[in-house]
Image (cartoon, rainbow, N blue to C red; front, top):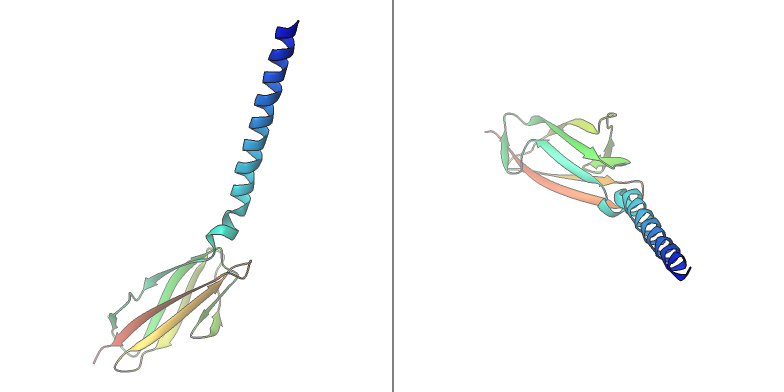
Length: 118
């Protein structure tokens, strides 16, 4: 009779451990956007690259972002997180600042420098 009680106690302990592990994994999965924050990928132009004229196109992709600004001005994002913005480069070089904010108000800022072709 005591072996049945011991077996039942072991099953209860294993069930409790599985329940806690499942809750922890689920919590981490749901907290991932908060922990990871916003992500910005600049597709073109690359940092320190030369642009063909003074007017050029900035393209990139964002994930986990509510709002993105380029040079302090908000720009639109499509449903896939892609963005495109036409900018003007001034000689000898132009520094571009891109800031992205997520739904938890975490902000990431990237800067890149472009050089207009002479």
